[in-house]
Length: 135
Image (cartoon, rainbow, N blue to C red; front, side, top):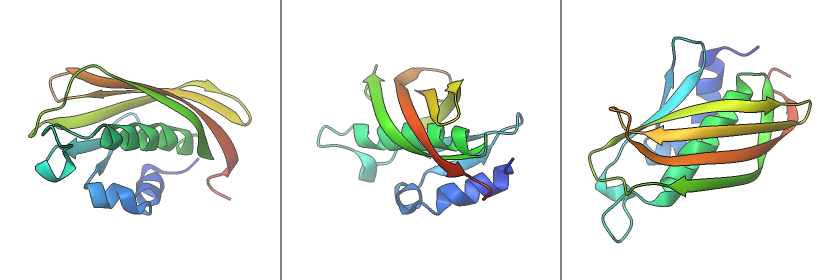
């Protein structure tokens, strides 16, 4: 199985993660999570966090959960439900988990919350495994 450090480096090899200034943080349980401080350059015309940023965070967090299971995956489908607008200055944290781990199909979910636990969005996605991570 890959290490947290290998998965973190792999996530940083995705240029959009660094462009958006998303932090990849190891967790005590051996997984990783994504964190982001919401700043004005990430806003939509209404002055709130652009939904595409949350979508990118959720997609990457769920893909990283699959990487921790030694599978490189591509997204087959993803849906997000946005509960609340995310105001500037909020720190968003992902909580991704695998609901189903097949030989080639993974089904995952991800919650996007602030530091006190307010839920802003929830994602659900299906991924297709294209190879082992450590090949």
